[in-house]
Amino acid sequence: MKITNKTTIGDAILILKNIDFQDQLDASFVKVEIPEITYGQRIDLSEIKTLQDLLFIPQKVLYNLTEDQVMCKSLLEVYNFGKSIYLELERLAIRDQKSFKYEPTSEEIKAGYNQVNHGVFGIVDTIARRIGIRHDDVFLLPEKRVFAMLKIDFDNMMYQKKLNKIISKQK
Image 1 (tube, rainbow, N blue to C red):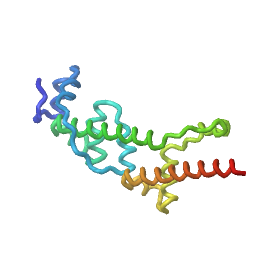
Image 2 (cartoon, rainbow, N blue to C red):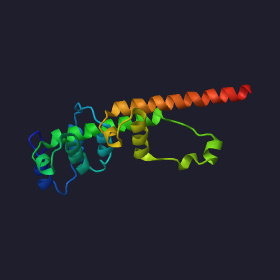
Image 3 (tube, one colour):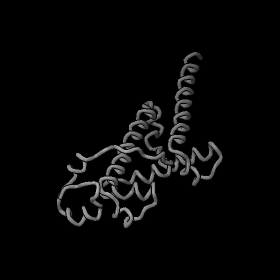
Image 4 (tube, helix red, strand yellow):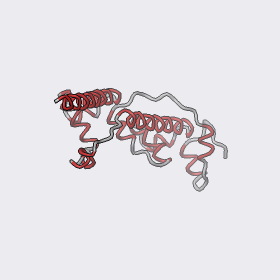
């Protein structure tokens, strides 16, 4: 079976149940424009781990579609959208790693730096307190806005750290 624009996900699952068609999908991949996502959607989309997740999670999270509704859509359309989302999530992860790169000092490590990781809740709590909103409302903010606030806070922390070091050397 050749995968075309008319091939539904349901068709592919029934016919290709035990056949690996990832190569055909990758060869047919065309990056599509994706909508702006909220911070909460980014968290939900980060659950994509398998091909099945790639097909269904973006449709559910961004378009509120059920699995049955997705099963009737074009396989290539759904795959292109899901893979585009996945590639964007990878880009965001790389951006975050570069933007928030930090090498703790030996003193900070001794003080427990590596044990301090509050995950998503730590970010949500920081943003909620920063702009005076409920924790749940942070998930509704545009992902870009959350990143910008965290980047500003990080840059300010790095500046303050350098300033403190300069001042302590002058004493």
